Image (tube, rainbow, N blue to C red; front, side):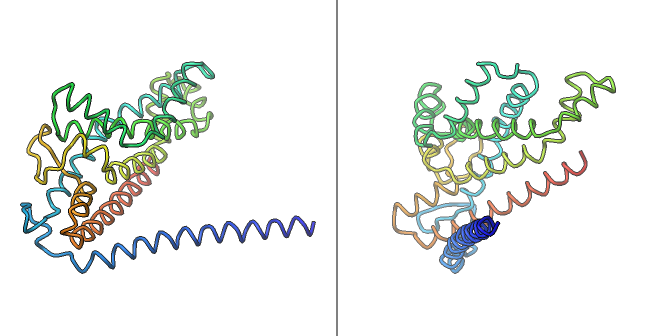
Length: 275
């Protein structure tokens, strides 16, 4: 009994230490970015026009928002409906389902540079889209599709079977049960996957350099080249001439990600509470 208490205390101390170290690293990174970037935030950085004298981040910020929205419009319906099929309609334990799941997990681990090369060869070159917002959005959508599909499937499977049985007992059909009972109950888990996908879109650099390009302007249509915030930071740091503006861009990127995550979490909580 005493040995078990010692083991439990040791594991408690170990997990607490791991949590403190993780939080410490995150706070250090955030603090480093804020300290280095906040002093260089100035109104000229938020100008709508980019030139060699004023490396404004506003075009990149707007391009990031457009890239995120377009990518989610493409990937979320496909991922969620694929998850509904795998969870609710596919035969349990079938080989096809196992192959799809293994394939999705494999695609999640592929380096983003390979997605960028594929997007450049297929969307940019083969389909003649050129370096464009659309080519970048489709490439990033393929990247986040396995993540959305797997998290949505897990959220659907976490819904108790009693909900389904109760709906069937009241005379509801399969389709009505899935979309009126199961899917609303799984919304918080689905939103968690979407939040992770947004973080990957906003922080992606390698795939977008090969597909969306690095033109620092606000795209007026999906076939124009665009530069996201992460690509903007890479361009400034690689040039080595505007490192301070690069740190300021990092601060804006950090704030944007925090705002998006907070807003998404509140939406998911509100939808989950009213479901």
